[in-house]
Length: 173
Image (cartoon, rainbow, N blue to C red; front, side, top):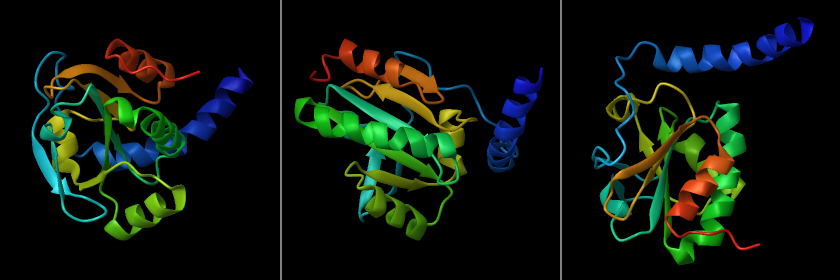
């Protein structure tokens, strides 16, 4: 019983952080599979604007990853998404990391220090609510028409890799 209690003690601060940032909103369920992703436009961390789902048009697949800086799991996941992006961008992968609620300065510094080359949208809780995001990270995979073809709550590298493979995006071995 002690290992479970220890695990809960280590997880609890992360859960409290997520709850503090999300519980005061009325979220819907994640967008259904097969439907076009809800549209939004947000400032990009490197300037300009990002529009989803139009950024997915013509790509084999687009990962839309919802995250925030103090989410430890997100900070484990994003370097893996960068690895996928680096290896598969030339084959038709796009990524939009949707930061929820952090300052532009925090996001820009993290992006620069981590070496992320994928676009990052600077969004607020209304975008998370539009997508029904209640946990971080949450990832949606869009097809080339902007339709939701898969979705993951939490970090699921194997699931992301399999979803991309179904769209013809194989990681070279």
